[in-house]
Amino acid sequence: MPEWSFLVTGAGGFLGQRIVQLLMQEKDLEEIRVLDKFFRPEAREQFFNLGTSIKVTVLEGDILDTQYLRRACQGISVVIHTAAIIDVRGVIPRQTVLDVNLKGTQILLVLCQDHHIRSLSAGFQNEN
Image 1 (spheres, rainbow, N blue to C red):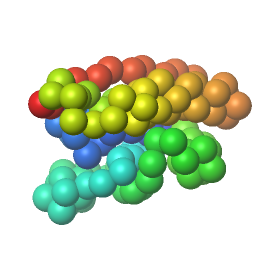
Image 2: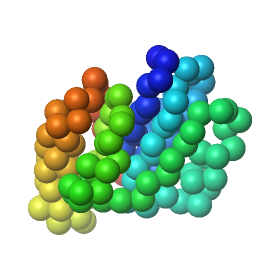
Image 3: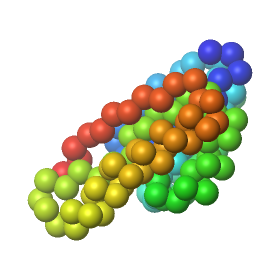
Image 4: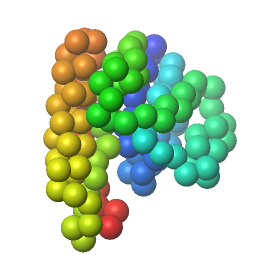
């Protein structure tokens, strides 16, 4: 994957962190941008202690912020989208869940098209 750069949304979660670890094993990546609304300090530190020459850019931002997401997508080859809210206990307002999961994904799809991003892969997990 020479000269490829990846954006991983939801990179602060379990699945996103694991995907970043796997990407770091690739030899020909130029950059991995990791995006989440919040990163625990140990997760943030982990991205810089993986012993690789791949550039890692940590982006703290909201999947619903179109302008922030637009900047995050600039120059990206592939998006791996794992940002989601999964609320099995029903404590998060339904509209918030729908906004993040549906609207956030829709925004990202449009931006991928606008930026001619080669590939988008989406996967979600249940952390509750």
